[in-house]
Length: 250
Length: 259
Image (tube, rainbow over all chains, first blue to last red; front, side, top):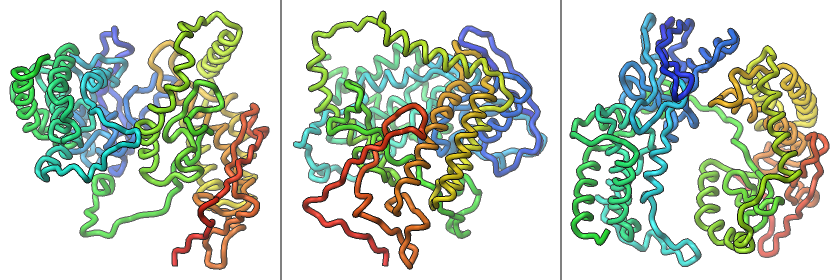
């Protein structure tokens, strides 16, 4: 297949940046999207040009690093698929593919397609943890009964890989889906009980500080999420937040 | 996940699989507190050899990281730090710091200014092929000796001919990769050297010359029941072997049988 790639190039955070066009030929349908970019980068390096910077790590859909906005969709056209899992059989010969970074106020661009997502780390540091005794008096997890329905929902929420596709696709640049997935996962389990109230208040406070927008229940986040995280988590976090606001001594 | 990669439904079409080399096994030597031979420098999880020795199976790396981080380090690092409580800020105007900084800067400058003709990926792939073919799932003396020679030549070529685009004071993924591949060039040779020394088959290390009649691993516990800890001496070929004997007091060493 021969394709035209329109890629966002930006030298640094202060650079205005622009879309550059790169033709690429002999793309095999079995290639992964990132493999294709590797091939393009090798060609650019041979020509003495600057290769396209993009984030990636595991290349198997679990680490949350890869973050390309492909032809107007976070992680591209396939459903519940990360950028690194996307393969070129999803495209046709002659296609033009637009590749942009995960833009948002909370995700400043570092270079080309790489954005700074440390805001997510700071949100997790604000409350995404549980206090547990690991010094040898650790309680056997099997001795704490957990309703199956709660465990299932917690597990589903826990599959969030923190990639930020939800933020990138949200018209308000809101991080509610991510934060609510983390809050839900811990609120539903007994281990998360000790800090349950402070957690949601602190994490939401940090989320607001980072400059993410507010939620207007559009649902684009759920549609684009590569792990299929449900909008119900946002509803649950809203309840947690309200309950903690009224009842805590925060 | 399989279906995403191959576009085949494994419920309908038999899955295509083949055996592959495992990831990095073994790691930096640490004591029971997870401290390395450098005082105050701790190595956790996949980076050290502690929980698994020289074998690390799938998902064990994750377990090792979690176990070291949650269950071990919180209780061992405090002891070291307690001696450091009154140390305060450490000044950077010392001879040792200056020398270390100079070495790091020189290495980076060398990589950036080399202006060779081959990309970092070119060398990475070549090294990968040597390791896969000659220090992979199954090893033999001839292959390992060849691998060592080839890696030494490749490392020389790397430092002469690598091309790293961009500059040092910006976000530069090529420079990042170059630094890593430079390290792999040394580690790769050391792995081959270690495999050559260990004249037995044991765990993830299979030597074709040391196998049973049924093709299973043949260990030599009399001579090789030790941890091989290699001390850095500059060139990988000069690394010094320290043997930590493995003494089993409550269990008897046996050979696993898959029959």
